[in-house]
Length: 168
Image (cartoon, rainbow, N blue to C red):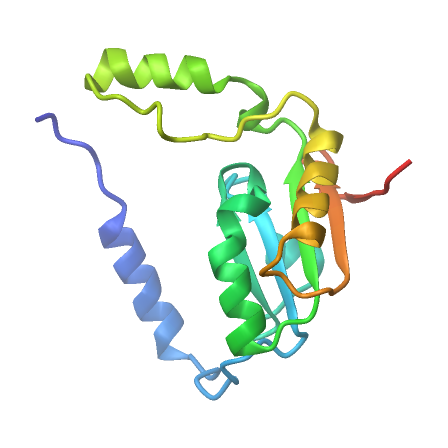
């Protein structure tokens, strides 16, 4: 096994500084703004900064592509147990999910790891706007998701701006 540089020491040092002045230990368990945000895990997207959120404001659920189906479990818990009553989806430009298909990643896994990943839907997409519309529709029709406002956005990694995606 080859050595890979770990970030853990830097994280631990940063946490010492953060915890030294920490004053938010009394925030409520439920998000103050009663919103759940589903966003892509892309490192160029900081949902809190992009949407003006502070600690305690919202649940932020992240996954590859910001796909709604991957977030259902967390959204149900967020709504049923922690009181959120709005959902915001954030996909973004230049997303890695636009660069492959299920077949290409499955073949890569088979070749490099000698494992079968045919049972996994990796959820890539070819059309960014359509992916947002599809995810909004999925949540609106899902039997476990409450009838709440659901808004989809595209975050532009080049400018930091969000663009509301509307049905035509």
